[in-house]
Length: 302
Image (tube, rainbow, N blue to C red):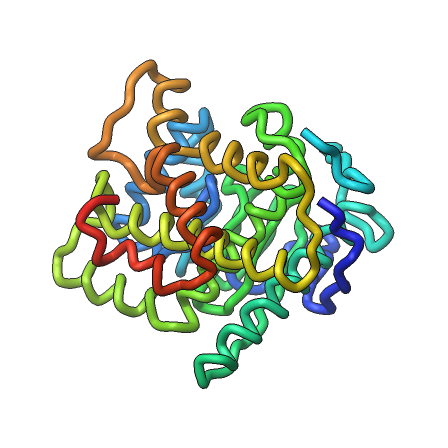
C-alpha cells in the first residue's frame, strides 16, 4: 500500500497517557455499541474469547459508566509494542493518512447524497484512556464511541495483529481504522439510534443473527466502500493489499476466535460475525462501492 500518497488528517489526538481522552466505547475485534445489559454480556464474552479478564475490563468501565462500543508497502509500517505514539512515529503518520482518506471519501459520499459528513477525531492512546464512557484499557482493542464521535486506538494493537492474529500488512491495519470510522458513518446516518430502539423493544443483541453482528458486519461493509473509493481517489493499493484486509477480517471472526480459545464455536454468543461473513461483507462494499449494498439489517442471510 503506497500510503504516503495521501495527506495527513489534523483530527488525530496523541494522548499523553494522563487519561484525559474524550468519550469511550466498545469492543475488541473492532466495535462500537451501547453498553447496556446486553453490552455487559458482550464485553464478558469478548474478554473470554480473547483470554482477557472480564472483571478487569468491566471494573475499568464501571469507573466512568456510559457507552462502550505479498507485495510490501512502501514504506512498510513496522509495529512495535510498548511505546507511546509520537508525532514523528511512522505509525502515527500512517494513522493520520488513513483517517484523512476516510474523511475525503465520506465527505464526498455524503455531499453527493445531499448531506454533510462530520469528521470524527481519533485518539491515539497508550495503555489506558479515561473517557466519558468510562476508563478503557488496551485490552478493549480499537473502538468507537457514538456519544462523542471519537475513535480510539492503541498502536500496540497493530503489533498484536502481527503476532497474535497473524494479520500483517499496511492495508490490514487500514481496514481496522476504516471499520471504526464505519461505525461513525453508522452514527451519522442513524443506525445506532435505530439499534438502540430495537434493543429497547427486546430485540437480541447477541447471537448469529443478533443486532450486534449485523452492526459489525455493516461496519465491515462500509470499510470496503471506503477501500473502493480511496483507491479511485489515490490509486494507492498494491498487489496483495485486498487479500491482507480479507485476512484481517477472517482473523477476527467469532467462529475462529472461539475455536482457538475453547475448541468449538457457539453461534449464540457471536457478536461480530464469522470469518466468512466478515470477509464477504467487506468484499461486498469493496466490489460495489455503495453503502446501499451494506444493509445487513434487512439481509435474510448474513
